[in-house]
Length: 39
Image (cartoon, rainbow, N blue to C red; front, side):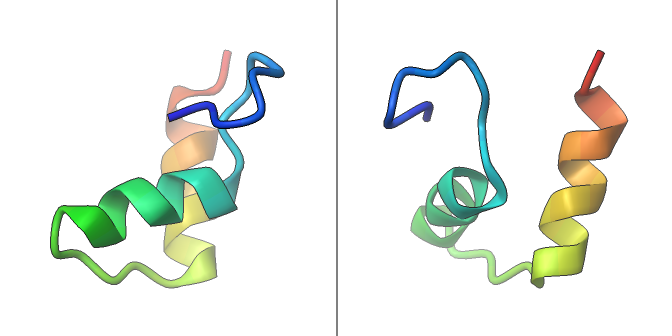
């Protein structure tokens, strides 16, 4: 998922994964998902 290999998953990278799974989350939803799991 981490396309650029920087150790972080951006909303763009997460959005690409989600869309490949048939989902279409908003930018806000993607940020919320990242915030929930970010340590």
